[in-house]
Length: 199
Image 1 (spheres, one colour):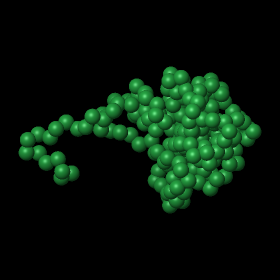
Image 2: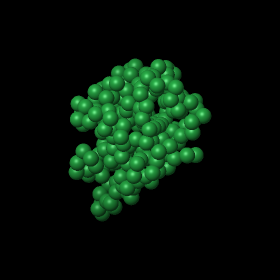
Image 3: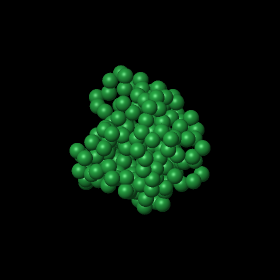
Image 4: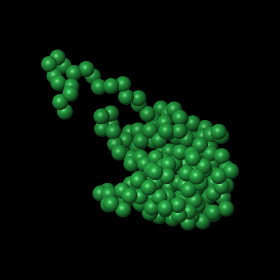
């Protein structure tokens, strides 16, 4: 399998995950194919003060959202899979129902039909029943539902460390080793007389 990964950035909060993922994939020598939704462009501006062009420069290839004839719209274009970071509830709904109405959702649909890993960093809270049903439907279709939840047991000291841990976990799902992920070695042994089972 060629070391190619499709990255989608949709309009949910948390576009920092997609941007950080692109930067790390470049460090790892993985070819990236990027598509950003129109709301994603707005969120990049609002959250990171970045333009579409600046983020596209981090990828090897970038496509317009309406280009449904792009390479990533075909299953014959071999990739390792796809990550949508972040994944809005609108994009989740399209994935869950097979609605390939733009290049991002079409590429996600192709990833599923070709039985390749599709990782969705879903962002919403609180979750309504429609959101939960769509997550279940997407998971049943083969997607990996991965809300970017912080790992406080690692004692992060910055937002960047929280983001890096999640991005490292995403890369690990594709078998990619990264300096971003600190492997858990277990908790320190409990003191004498302290219960380790009652929590």
